Every structure is written in structure tokens, then in C-alpha cells.
Length: 451
Image (tube, rainbow, N blue to C red; front, side):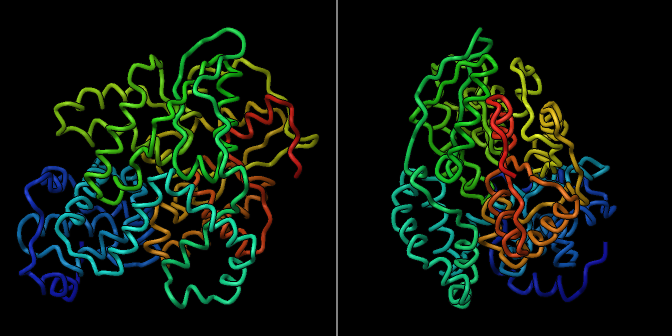
């Protein structure tokens, strides 16, 4: 691996700042498993856009090792390279040496948040994000002024004039992915217990999510209908909160642990066979509860037991099989492209199952895009914190999806859907987007798509 002398000097220039603390620093054994072959470079989205060695998995591992060894400090010059990582885990899929980069970048991000003093503006934005997005109860209150903000045309004004972007590119990025807020965003139409239709096969819990329950409530409703139509009794504990994905991915250690404990407690004594989630990023974190709470003697075993029950909705249905008849979604062939969400494809190794389910719908013809495994740029809150890189990735992703000629895009993650919707509009294209569970729901109910 070639690293410029200037890069090392810049990073080492503030050596008086402290490095990693003793609480789970990046594991040297995992670092040493990297042989610096460079296979990760072509699949790393940040390296593709930025083009710098230090903004690749290999470069970041070099930095982790140097900080561990006390050769350089955890300072602005090193942290900026960790911040450019999307956490998409494409490098984990690609690596021929089996380097567990996911564990390395996770450990590093928690270290950064504990030991690196961010600027006031950065702290303020992050505090805003982590005070709102993992708190659907608070976020729902904020929807009231946002509803009128959209209805009175302020959103169109700010986007047309670019005024907000001049004030703060990050706030502009946050506003640009805001979906349309409707009266449904304020409603909660799901009961605590929904019986199975026909013979009961399973008793399953359903996690509603944060962004999903407020901005994509029809996806949750469709998921419940598909599960009950296929013999599942559905349990939805009202005490459930955020799954902890956003704070965990950004190194907010204590908030992530607290949310994980709350989620485990909410499903305690429900007697569910499985816990179902329909959002890719949430599912990956839920399956990591054993790792998140490994140092908690009270919750360690509970976390492992809970994580063992978690299934992505598509993963679950593909495994247990559909028992209800599927009907065509329109009279003619539906050309459909499935968007691989990173935390399904790379994080949970789920790719075939969604395609198997969609191909069971009569009249569906699946199209495959170029660079299907490359991140769309959403990556949780990445498109708000690193808008420039996210913009380029969003443009590339939408261009590749459009080039398939598909009539509809199937997206299994709310963040991806928001990012893709934004860039479809920016490119002046009108292509429908739906969650795979919505498409299965339409097919089961015989409802035709209006496309």
C-alpha cells in the first residue's frame, strides 16, 4: 500500500492529542488479518468518489493500526477519513482474506465519539439528529410544523432558491430528503395483536421502526397483512422504540445500549417465535444485539436470545414459504428492478430471497442494474453528514437503476427509498418505488398498480 508522506505528516501533526482508550479499541488481530491486497478499493463507494487511499478500507485500517501503536493521534486529520466511511460493508463481502472490517469500523466510531472533540457546529447537528430520529414520539410532534412547512410551499421555495444550501449544506441535505408528510403520518392503525388468517403457523413480533412508522406507515401495514395472510399471528408491543441502528452506526454507545435494552424488554414474555423487521439497516443492528450488549451482565444472554429470533421480513417469508395465492400486479409484464440495500446484501447476506419472492408474483420480470452492490449514499444519516459524497453516489445509483428500463424500483429500506426518490426528482424522472412487502400485499389482495 502506498501512503503519501504528506498524509502521514498531516495526521501526525497533532500527536499530543490522545488516541484510542482501553475500552474495545480496534482489535490488532483483526487489523493484522488485512494483507493490503487492494481488492476492497473497487467496491468501496467513498474511495470511488474521493479517490484517496486513506478514504478506503485499507487506508482506514492503516490509520487504526497506527493509532493503536501510538504513531499518530486521533485528530481531525485522521477522524475525517473514518467519517467518510459509509459503513456499507461492501469491502467485507469482497475481501478474500475475510477481514472483519465491520467490527473494526464499529469499534473505531465508538472510540471517535468518546475521544475526539468535534466542532461546535458538528456537535450541534449530531445532537439534533440523535435527539430526533431515534425518538419517534418526539419526531411525530415535529411533523406538525413540517406538515405546514410543506403545505405552505416553503419547501419548494428553499429548494428552488438554494437558500438553505448557502446557509448550511448539511441542513439542506437533511431537508432535501424529507418525504411528503400526510395525515397518515400522525396515525397509528395497527393493533397490539393481529390474528392470523386461516391456520396459524407462527406467532411473530413486528418492529415498526422510527422513520418507517412515521414516513412509511403503509409499508408496516402491508407487512402485517402479508404475514397474517400467510398464517402468522402478529404481536406489536407499543413499548418498543428505536432499534438503535442510527446511534450504533455513529458510535453513540450509551444511547445504542439503552435503546437495545428497551427493545428487548418490549418483546419479553410475548412468546413470539420470530421478531420480524422490514428495514434493512434496522435488521442488521437487531442481529448485532449480542455484540452491542456483550459487556452487560444483565442483558448479555437476553440480547443473544433476542438476536437469534430476528428475521428480515423477506428472509422469513422465503424460508417458511408463502401459502396464499399471488395475482398479477398489472395486465402486462411488470419490469422491476430490485435495489440491494447494503445492510441486507453485505450486512445480513440477504440477496436471493427478495428476488425469489418477487419472481413468484405472476407477470414480474426482474432486471439487474450495473454496480448493484454499490451503496446509494444514504447509509443511515451519512447523506446528512457527508452530503457531497452522498450526492455523487445517489446520482450514480439512480442512473444505473434507470438504465435497466424498469417500470418500478423495489427498495427494502426507507433510507434508500428517500435517497433514490430525491435523485429521481433531480434527474427529472418519474419511476415508482415500492417496498417488496407492499408489492406482495398488492398481489395477495389483487390490487393493480397504477403504472
